[in-house]
Length: 472
Image (tube, rainbow, N blue to C red; front, side, top):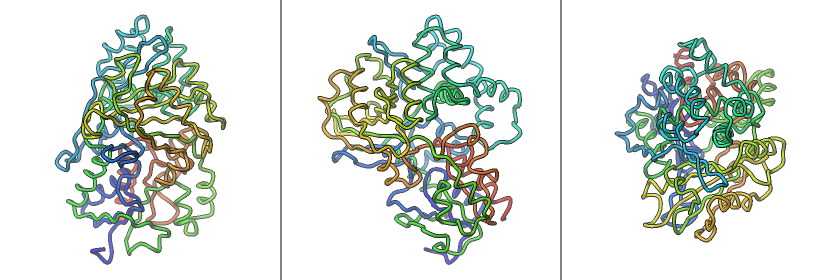
C-alpha cells in the first residue's frame, strides 16, 4: 500500500466495484480496491480455459448495457484500450425447420422477417427504441421518481406482465413468440412470473438502440480499461488480496463492498443491526448456470447459416419449450431440453483463437447449486441446430454452478444475477436501505443492489454517490 489511510476502500474489482472506485476518485477522494482474484473484473474476465492460444471469457461476453451505461459511456475508456465490436446482427434464434429468426439493428428489418407478427413487433419496440436515451436512465437506477414519468409508466404497464402471456397475446406465429421467450429467459425467472417480460423488452430495445457488442481481445479488456482509468485518477488496485474481515482493511472513511449479502454478513455481520442481519439472511438467490467453454477446429456448422451473423445465439426452439426449461430449473430439477445461451465471439474477433480455429461458450440455467452434469444436454441442443458440432471439439472446460462460485464468490450457487429478480427483490434489493447499511460508512455496491444484474456499473455509481452525500 502506498498510503497509510484512504478516503474510501472498495472490496471487489468487478465492474460495479471499479465503477464505485472511479466515481469516488473523480470526486477527488483517495481510493484503494482490494480484489481476491489474481485478475480484476469478476465476471468480466478472460483466461485460456481450454488450450493455449484460446482466449475464453470466464463468465460474460456480450455487453449491450455496458456500451449503453450512462456512467461507462461518460468515461474515456477507448483511451485506455477498450474497443467494441458490433456483430452484423445482435441475436440469432434457430428453429427446427432449418431457419433462424434474427434481431437486426433495425426494428423494421427484424419486423419484416416476422411476417404477420411484424406490425406487432414494431408496435412494441419502435417506441422503446425511440425513447431509449431517456428511458434507460430511469431503468438503470434505483427506485425513485422518474424523470420521464409517462414513458416509464407505458413501459411498466407492459414490463410487469409474465413473458409467456405477453408473447402469446401479442404474437400469432411461433417464430416471434420463440424470439421473445429467448429474450425473456435472460431473466432467470419462470416465464410465467410477473415481471419476466421486462427483460425481453429491455434487451430487445437495447439490441436495436445499442447493439449487442463484444470486446476486442476478450472481456478482460473492459476490466483492464476500467482499472487503467482508475489508476490514472490516482486510485490503487491490489490483486490477490482477499478481505476476510473489515478489520483487515487500512484506515478509511468509507467502505464499499462489491459482494452479495452472504459475503457481507461474513465481512461485517457482527457490526450490523439484528434487523438488517435477519433481512440479509432472507435474501433469495436464484437458479444457477451450467457453463461450458470449447476450443473448436472450425466455426459451428449451423443448419441455419444466418446464425453466423450474430455473436449470440439462443437455442431453445419454441416458446413452450423455453418456458418448460426455465420453469424446471426454478423448481429444482434440470430440464431434459434446456434453453441454451451461446456466444461465438471469435467469428468477429480473430484475437480469440489461433488462425482458422474458434472459441465458443454456452450455458443453460440449472437448479441453484445443481450437482448434476448437464454437459450432454447442452451439447445435444447445439448438435440439434448444428449437426456435426461435436466433431469439431478440440477441448472443453466444464463449469457447473459450484465451479462458477469457486471462480467468483459472488456467483452463489451459480447465480450469475446476484439474487433472484422477483418483484419483491427487483426494486428494493437487498433491503430497503438499498446501498446503505446500518453501519455508518459501510455500503453495498454489487449487483445485489439496484438496478441489478448486467454489466453497466450503475450499482457501483449510485452507491458511490450515496457515500459522497452522506460521508463527505
